[in-house]
Length: 87
Image 1 (tube, helix red, strand yellow):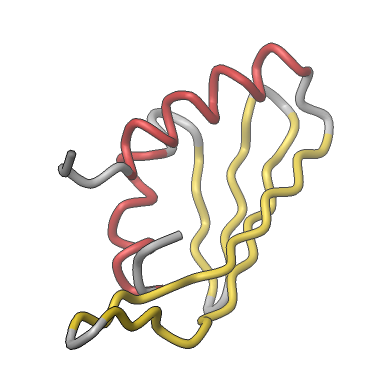
Image 2: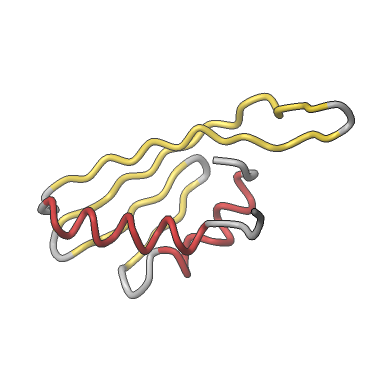
C-alpha cells in the first residue's frame, strides 16, 4: 500500500466499518461475523521518482472463519475507504 503505518492505523477504523478492531504495533485484528481478519504490515523502502518519495507498506490479509462472499464485501469496502484521490 502507498502509505505509512501511521496513516494505515488512522484509516483502519473507517475502513473496517462496524466490525470490532484491535490495532497492534505491526498489525491489527478485525472481528467479522464471528470470524476474523488478521492484518500484518511491514514498512518498505519508499519508492522514489525523481524528487518524489512515496511511502510503501507491505500489508498481509489473513481471513479465518469468514466466508468468500463476506470477504469480498469487506475488501470492496476496505479498498474504497483507503483509496486516495487522483487520476
